[in-house]
Image 1 (cartoon, rainbow, N blue to C red):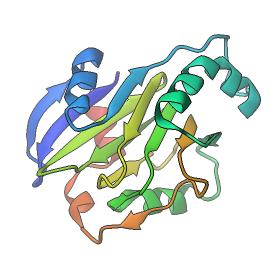
Image 2 (cartoon, rainbow, N blue to C red; image 1 turned 90 degrees about the vertical axis):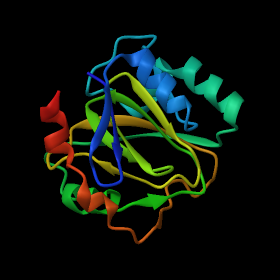
Image 3 (cartoon, rainbow, N blue to C red; image 1 turned 60 degrees about the horizontal axis):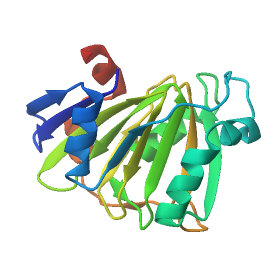
Length: 184
């Protein structure tokens, strides 16, 4: 189940939200788009990028029209991915991007930690969820020690995912993926 946990900067839980519409409404207050998409054709885990993109063509086209995305791709990680720990560490440090960070979870899950102000919004995203992190919003992401997900990524810049690390150690004060998914 998708979940939003709102915390202060020390990690103290202020609010927990599990209703999808309430999560979307709360995140929209900080400029985050949170949607639920349904594929137009049945998909399996083995489907290639072309089939996945076709299944969500209308939604991708709608967001591309609205936000001017220039490229789109599909990425996946599995528990046997050789670079999974290296990638996890790269995403676990608080950073920003000059571009949106837009992810649609085709299957699997991950946890985004958004730090746009004096609060941290912990968003557990699951298959069917789309989240957009606005440009220049401090955040980090945890996919867990055994990642198993496939995501569509949308970009407005040709460079794609480029992080500017904040140097903050705030991410160390918050529970990792494994603790978050056990909460629910």
